Image 1 (cartoon, helix red, strand yellow):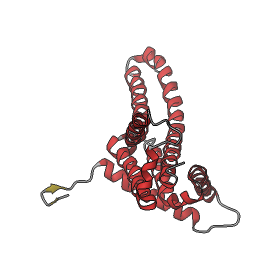
Image 2 (image 1 turned 30 degrees about the horizontal axis):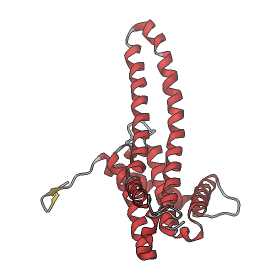
Image 3 (image 1 turned 135 degrees about the horizontal axis):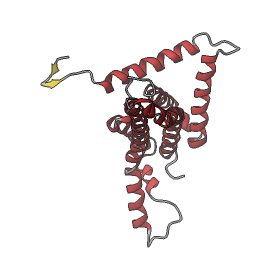
Image 4 (image 1 turned 60 degrees about the vertical axis):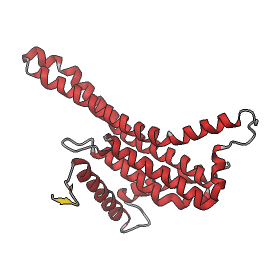
Length: 234
């Protein structure tokens, strides 16, 4: 596509499907909420369920003050969910199976926690690393553990999503490959391909569940981390 300042610019699968995910998400929400009927359509009902889920999760984790993060959390939830579902279609690309994408999302969350925490509470935000009621003798060790735990959050948040999506798709491809290989071995092979075919169908259903579940887990953990920015001494 050209270069900018000596850096080559090219459209990768990740970039293409991140754009597609964003366009599809925005398009769905605009269509679903365009009419805003008193009796909601199916699309409006789905959009409202997603809205209510994120709002309730964030409110339960961070309280009313945490609702300032609702646009961020809702955007992350919808992006991860749609990206996961896109990966279930043949010849589509799963952007959440790339660690750099999930790590960027995780770093966005953690940097938001840090910046908001310092802006809102100043150096009082550092109270997050000093639990109350800890004896002075073990306090330095506890503080070090809390800091390491905090710094590991973007790693655990990104690896959890990346690993689950990548592992599921690899498993699906393995069983689908068995079907193709066995079906070339005549009648016996076709009969033997029945089991991997059944496993592929079952795993496909499971992967749809995992797509929703991983978006849910990512959102819940994000809300918990943002709660620390709102209530560092809680």
